[in-house]
Image: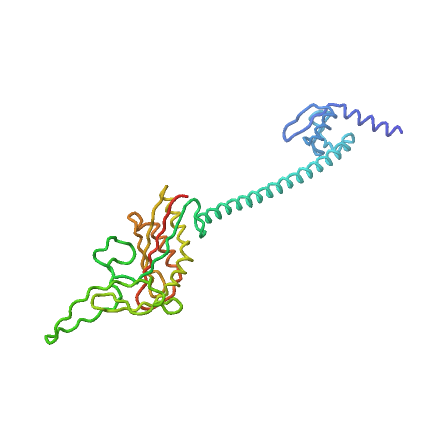
Length: 315
């Protein structure tokens, strides 16, 4: 009983005593034993901190002093628990930041995607021209005509006055024995708006069409019904070209007549835009690129020319 009492008295004496302690090369203090315990719990001191109650010559580690051993152990446990709690909190914060970043990225991607879809739909989706009103007149299909010197417009595309592929009649040798035949007046080029009784089953146009004063005939073999079907199905692919032109020209409104020739391979060979400000430029290029994708049937004989007009304006 007296040994326990002596130990208790020694601990109380050490806690009430004045102590110096070292931090690196510095000697600090004096502090009471109770103040040393507070610094232990705060993490400022550890069990390896050297202290002295008898002056600069008698330093010992706190964990070696009986009065401080229990306090050193408690402080170590406390510091370990707090460190684990800080690590767990840091991990939770990191997870929240990553989750928030992923959610923000997904929402941002969805927002950008929705904006792109809306923009694509307003510009490129067939039949949807946004605030722009686009009306299409029915196409008129005729056999291709040779370029004339008195043509009113210079159109981009193939070179002007390109030689027509229409076969020409070889010149006849003059004969002194035969009187010259009177010249016939030039016949008009036939269009495909002929009467139904002149068209064979299936809508394919055949027969002879006079194209010059000498009576030279060329064969028309393209299928008007098939051309009309392709034009009707594909004409909305041009809407985005007009939409982009309207964005370049605020308040854009005009009637835009188009004329294009379908080559024998079934692809658009030439394009004319009969509008003084739109004969060439971004809209013309856009129209030509789109129209070259139109899948007409290949055919032989005289090439087909299609006239198509769009009226563009604000709703």
